[in-house]
Amino acid sequence: MSVPGPAPRRRVPGPSEPGAAVPGPDFPQKRTDYAGAVYGSMLAASVIAASSTQEDHPRLSLILLLVITGLVFWAAHVYAHVAGQREAGKDVTFRQVRRVGRHEWPIVEAAALPALAVLVSPWLGAGENAWLALTVAICQQVAWAALGAHRAGARTRQVVAEGAVNLVLGLVIVAAKVAVGH
Image 1 (cartoon, rainbow, N blue to C red):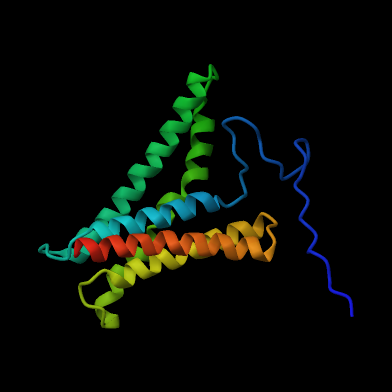
Image 2: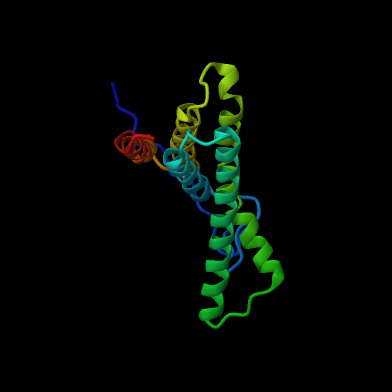
């Protein structure tokens, strides 16, 4: 009985082919930024872990913190990219800024599910604590990392490794929340 060889790797389009990444400040227009989604999920988990449920309106405060932090980090990423292009002596057009903004938008989108978890947690019996939202943020972080690796053509072992690394990173955030006592 023969053992099948490794799965064939997906071919990445060349620079002049449709679907190829555009060099410089332009990003591919129809590709999901999995790195941004992973980063945004980790950011959301960190915000949740650092938040306190001892406020007057803890759910509203946490939802606002998630959304505002996502927007601020998104703006910082867009600005950093644009500033980097300018420092490299390249002109930056408004069209390029918009494209960078769209490319980095998954950072903001990653706050949506954890914020929704915060909103519905009392109806699910989770009360005012943030553990449901933290779990959602970490699960989506792992899922985005694994999906990004899979879509990039990684072998199964690499996809599992990406998920495992992101699970460990998420668990470090959980450990920090437990250690600090939030």
